[in-house]
Image (cartoon, rainbow, N blue to C red; front, side, top):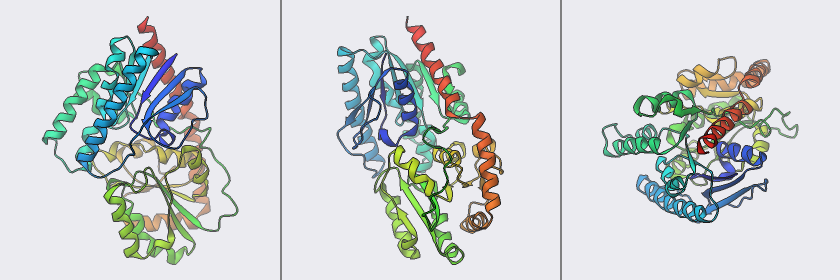
Length: 390
């Protein structure tokens, strides 16, 4: 079966998209991914990348909309042309933005089934990122577009139960049209390994988007105090995009102002294969957010990757994380301040038994909640859509 995916991201670094594509490829399906340009070639012969020629740059909201529009035109043309020469039975479109689902307009007319994968609720993200109110014209427009996108797609997938509640509460789509595929890591890549003996430093690690909502500043502000107690401390940052926007530059200025640059290591963006090796250099993983209506409902994939590898995590206690994990699995920040962060890191550094206890409890969690279980749900969705096509 020929399947297409559309995603405004670099395929090598998008774990959710890769899990789907690699699962399908292992089943013998041919998968074309329309995605952003990068120097990467999939290992599996059944996966082919169709790359958007322009680089991704984070500048401001207007630039975002321009990039989205150009990518939409590219993906629309690719899917339309390919529909004429090799019909896709299934097209799986990933947000953001939501309106990418309409790139499959012509294929849908020819009978292709369409999945819309809502990684994040776009209105909530816009409101928190750009400090917009729900009454703002752009937020209202995005909410309206979301309704049309849900009506257009044959099936909606989203990343957790909280997102499903949001979408079900404001759209006319029946609840059974929306399926939750949880953000659990591929444990073929992310699994426990002994930390390399050659490492002499004590490493904190952050992976993912560099943005104000992910609150890296509380870690930076704690570094001057921590290095007095942990002289070999290092903070390793692995960004999703290189030099990503104004907040990234703000963090660099903050690092220089605090005079902690020799304790900070900022890597280039890495593929999942590279991250799965790099992650084992971490003694503590970091999942930090500023609490708001968006971050209270996210389950960061990088957090579950740390946990699957047996790495203790210091995380901001949000509603969804508190609901999903106990304090026997994660070292939670209640007040979410640099002082509290300092105390939690120091406690983990000094208490090896605590680190081992956290690792033991998370290993039990992943015996029940894991990607193979979510993969079965995904296959079920595809089988249902294909049976409806006949």
